Image (cartoon, rainbow, N blue to C red; front, side):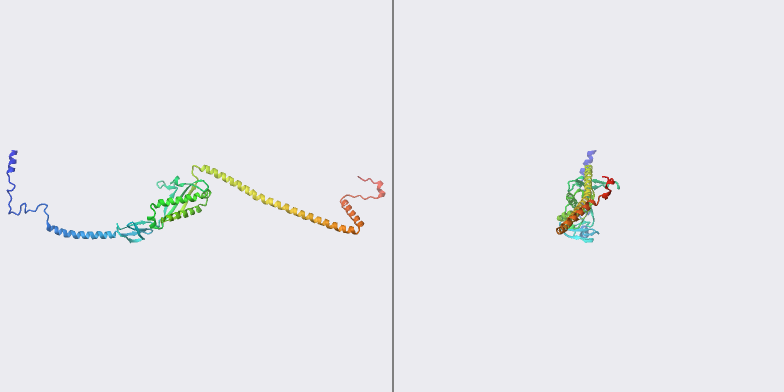
Length: 346
């Protein structure tokens, strides 16, 4: 049965229904994938216009992509093949689209903050201690060879966009390293008593000047606004020893002040006493000299009288001596006639 079916199929001629005069045959009937040239010509004309319009639109959009807006407080640097050509200022600006030109926009008036010696942890609750000390940055050596832990804030901004872009590869790291170096140099030449006292303003001024000088030598395009010392104290590991030293220094200063006060008190008194003694001695000298001169003049006068009348002078001198001797003594005057009847006490 199966063989008969295959035999009947093989006997059937494939050319049995072929008629060359008929239009509907294998040669005249369009094949499934046959290309229609007329239809293609119309479609090609339509698609060509569309492509041209699309290209024009793309070119227009490409040129329009060079329009950009700069906000207030910002500046743009226009870079052409890696070279700075001009700046863009607030408002609408234009640059050649990529790959010819590109722009770099920076907020030149924005104050930026860098922390040295600590880091703020914003994940902690506000109101608590949300800072973490960085010992490698905060520990410094003072001018009198003491150790101090110091934290500070640095505020800075861009003042030259071209230098900022081309001369500094990592601006924030550069500013941080520069200010940290300036802080260490200034603190290294300052005694710890100044660092811990109210002379911090003078110290920060020196740090700002030195850091700005270094950044200017780099042509970094950066301006240091302010350096603020937040905390300055001995490290926790040596704070007890530091307090002992400070207590000893305070005691020393106290003793020195007391000695100075005693010195200031006793020296004027001693000088006054010495001056009084000197004045008394000078007065005594003048008195002795005056007396001696008086005695000398009196002796000379008496001698002149003695030379004139010696007996009279002798009598007068005798009477003066007797008067001087008997002038202050008790005297008893008696009559010679009553002498045998009177008992005179010895």
